[in-house]
Amino acid sequence: MEIEYCFGDDGPAYFTRAHVPHDEFMAEVAKQVDPDDRILSEEPSHCWMRVCRNFQEEMMMYVEAKPESRGAFKCTWVQAY
Image (cartoon, rainbow, N blue to C red; front, side, top):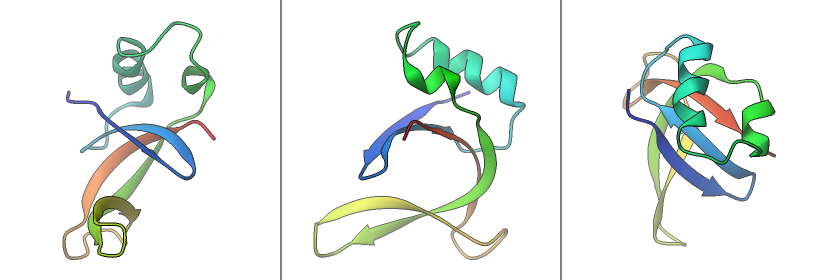
């Protein structure tokens, strides 16, 4: 399972591009962070995401999408606010 990291205005997040069991996902996240990282106390969720370009800030960003809509992919996500 490939875990990706991103950081935005809402704080740091980790995700994988699939719906996987939450315990397996969090075990993989735990391998990438310190044992006392607050993200490990957050509850992951399943959702659908899409990559969009923010032309004003010249960067790519992930946004929530409707299931099976154009460009959307399944995602298991956890974020520390």
